[in-house]
Image (tube, rainbow, N blue to C red):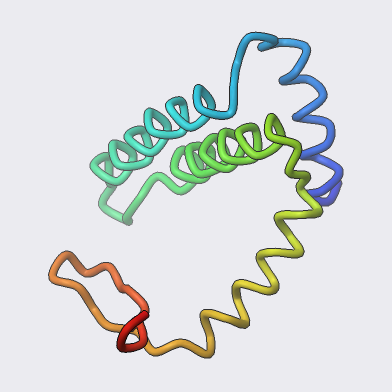
Length: 112
């Protein structure tokens, strides 16, 4: 199986040729519609739970749109992976609070 880095390089090259007029912002707009598809996939549950295959494909579409937006600004998949590692460590060292909608936010320092 190819790595995510190999797959993303292949996907971006294809995307730039196939969608020459797309922009970083238009890819984010597409991401919004793909997120709605993930939400719809959650609504189509079976007796055993979610349709994992359909849901997994929708998550992949979201990831592709996000990578596309970044790639069109010159941010590579390697840049994202490196920042992912840095941000993970930063987040692990933060304090977190639960919001009313079941999301979480890091507790901002006083005056910050």
